[in-house]
Image (cartoon, rainbow, N blue to C red):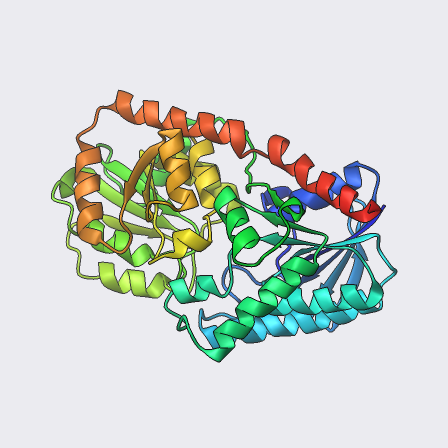
Length: 414
């Protein structure tokens, strides 16, 4: 089987990434299939071209892992503004579509690209060339834009986006979604036949790295975290949809400040806004760690007693933050800011691995942090283990990844 994988983001070093596109590429090659990956030049999370790269229309090279890697030009978006992201999305869709149009004909195209525009252009090329098309849905668009307050719910353009997203989904050989709630949405709202919608959650690597205590101690000292402090951590993208500002505001309201510290690790368009919120603190309870290098992932997560997972507005209804998986696989309980009846809320309630708080309410989050600070270490360990057990049963690479490649194999032969 010859597979063409189009991914809007594909990291330059496979060994340090847990991105699903990388794992899928490795699994396809391991099964003996020919693979070409079409992606952008690496620029995440800062939105600036990584050192050592220069943008061209196309570059091609044989990856050591055994597949052809084609990188395409696209505009870069260093700011989380709707117009910037649209230009980035559209430009990558246009250039990657040209690459697919003139590539050797594959047996199946798998699109793990930006929704609506980039995916839509690939869809049109697939239709012209009569190539089976499979899409991955990580966020529901345009509903995700509306939930972030970036677009109004009802106008002609939003109606067109909904219609076009439905056309793409109904015209695809298979639609892979990350939860049953997403599946219900595509079957009812987008009218995709039931048998073509497949639920495969995102996943993480179920591995436990043994960290020596001295390394954690050195990191605490470098960040000026007192030895008796109870450390809560947010680690991930600090963008508009994440709502990290809420946890900064909540941290400043926590009363037991002498034993509480909040570490925010990551980068993104809202990092400076979060730093501005914390600027007036006098006790150093909010600490930033940016950039957060991939090799520091286990260090930062294991430093935490509790991990924080905010979402903004109704974002939890239309996306599921993949960081939840790495959080739980680190055996740490999670405080999630999400509305009930969202997939994120379902996971937290089913697992027993944390607590739910209404989004965008720093007062409620501060109260929950205060409550959690009063719990015993045994109770925190119990909840951390419950979250890890749930992730190990449902959200690991070994469980989820083969299902994706099976769907591609089935889609190619029909």
